[in-house]
Length: 55
Image 1 (cartoon, rainbow, N blue to C red):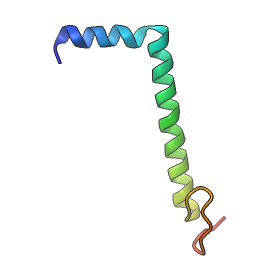
Image 2: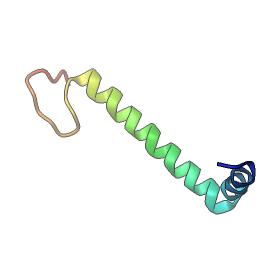
Image 3: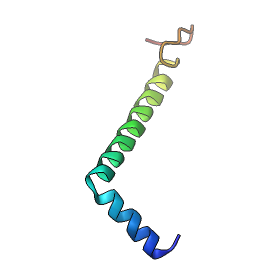
Image 4: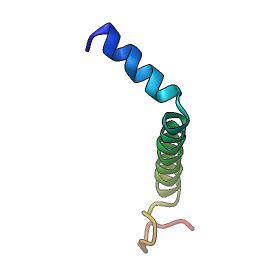
């Protein structure tokens, strides 16, 4: 990717739509991390019922 393409991408991300996209992606990533940590802690995935489940 050239420097001009990177600058164009950066400008797009700075727009209102770009900022909303970054917020949305970051929020989804955080939610996935929270769910993975919870699943590891309780010993089961979301809505999964196992004998190993601790909660």
